[in-house]
Length: 250
Image: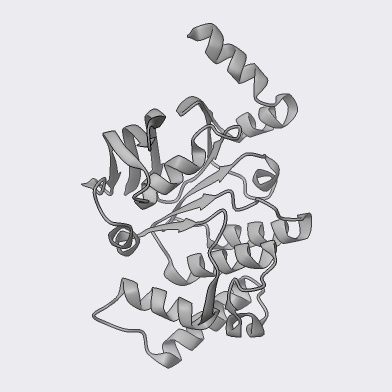
């Protein structure tokens, strides 16, 4: 069971951003995709989720062996792919609880979740993530701090229980306390039934969510792969040494 990216080339408007990306995330594994700003990390995340602003010109995206390259975003979500956004949208007039119930039901249209079952599931996950019960009565992301927005994303992850989760810059804009809360939530949800891809520019979230594999992207290509020690090396040396090696090998 895997999410597999094969020789992926992606362009937006008149520019190719990804130039042949290969990546396999299996259930039970946590991968980190790192790279400097503008390297193509968020482009990959959006393409995995089917954002129509990104055009796949070559390559495939496979979910458990099935080609989903042309699938709509809602089809990918129902099939088990989830994305936590770097900049989550605000939805005025829709409470967190109502949004979560609609999202859960969208994955099971023939068997809508009962009110009691939903309430129990919501309380269970809020306890797991240490979220105040009043949080879910607020309108989704309206007036939320950066940490509250990211916590709402992780609560969605907990409620939807996807097979594969892509977390795009989940640590962006968080202070250390908010970062720890989000990291604790991600760690609580890790397990054999879910594969995770954490996309980040900095190593700090990886001090709390230790990945099994680390991939480094430069200029739309994955140029280095390794274990968590690769992130430690980046913390010490930055990205310049990789740019020099890539340039030397070009």
